[in-house]
Length: 489
Image (cartoon, rainbow, N blue to C red; front, side, top):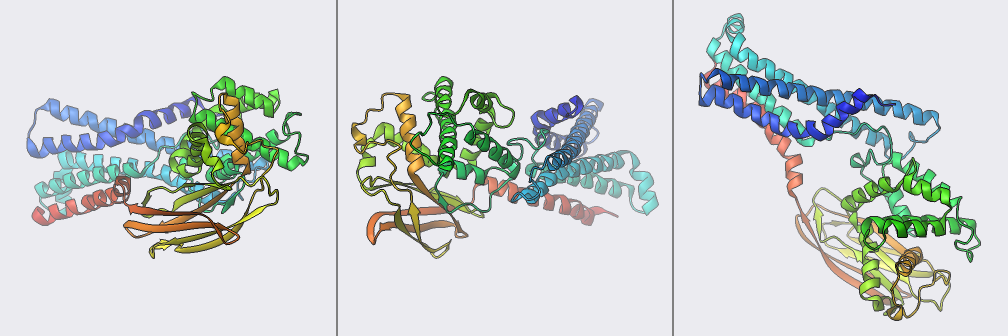
């Protein structure tokens, strides 16, 4: 049970504290520059204002560091609880790396407090104690006071540079979504046959993944009697049930005007029992609020997966005849811009329309990219799901009037269920344009060809987080050294 004090500290740190850490160092810096350089011997009220800013700066740094300590203790406590419960977090892929990033973020909060205290101590020393200390070191009192003053400014700059890269963690323990911002997936399945389910289990952090596996197992064991009656295999019914629920939750998040809460509940009742619907909407492990948080994060961090779903919806509502044009409907999510230093996810979705051939189909994919891309050449053969008449997708989709939300949901989930995804990552160190050609074929017969340009850039966030702290830290180091060389005697 998290104490009221810890929750209060965390609430202040997340809502107020981090914002003030961008404002206070700059304000204190400007105040002492004005007080000691621009207008030497300023009125006492200005000195009082600067002193108050110092106290607020110190207090805010103390609260932030206290929050980091409390959150780290809470993290360790939750790990012990989950381990006793038998939750396999210690063996979850990426958990230890996730833990290091999480605690490193908290450690930066202590660094900020350290620089704030050092800066204030040097500032006080430069004003009130420079004579005594200068005599002890046998140097000029004025020169020592000036050096201490510039060292104080340097420490403020260090504190500000650390602020740029910190994240203020939430004090929610190891709960759903609490570690998403610290997690970056390094591996993912190349072939995706359950688009949303496999994508989510790859993209969420290890702790949320544990809850997701428990959540999906509960749904799979509680399927309504009339759901998927034509599918005899329990495993296939379970997979389809989980996929349907995930699609419904995403559609409600992405298109709330189309799939409102009432529609969502009605469709959920078709798939699972009353108790499961209650858990999905109001439950303790993964509820509607948690899913909105997860989808919001994933659509920002890895939008390619969900762009496919959006494109299916738009195609069904705007140009459904596209589904009837060829035996295979292929959609791609290829972002036009790739950030340097990051691998870019590329997704292709293939929907098999060959109802006359119930057997699994094989497709070949050839990927050819510019010399700077990795991979540059890639050839792969893969099996896609055969057309399944259980999911009724009319052959003449253009004449299928989508006049009810129910039909739109049914078609979307059916297409996703029968489709196959190809998910791979491309990396380039080359700033500029990279031409890519990709082709699909079936039994050496061309199916589709796409040519696209992947442009690699460095965005402002990269410069801010990569070079901002380095430049500020360099300034903090060299500023007092330069000042000492110019005038310490």
